[in-house]
Length: 106
Image 1 (spheres, rainbow, N blue to C red):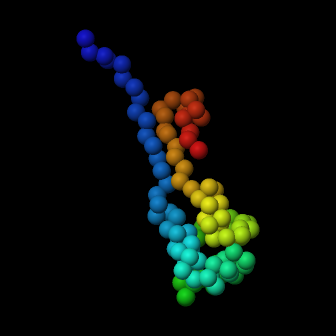
Image 2 (image 1 turned 180 degrees about the vertical axis):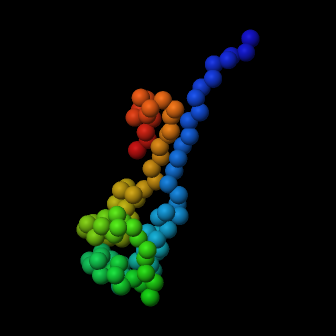
Image 3 (image 1 turned 135 degrees about the vertical axis):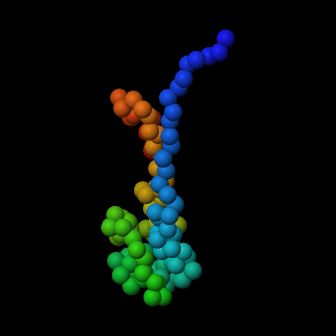
């Protein structure tokens, strides 16, 4: 006999990697240039305003505020905090609203 129990479809939705492209560009610039890295770590507002070699970073206000609020001692620490705070989030959309909270992946 066939099993006719049908489960509701779940969909995993992820933020696009392209949404964080500017952050990747910022961190890459700091990786290849020690002066820019020092500026980003010690005077992030100046680093974001000046950009790197005539390149500006088109960051969201949330990203700018976060970068300026972080007091990291190294580029690795800065990147780690950014990933932890803004990193990829996954949400499962479930058809029954009363059960949504138990399916959120954070």
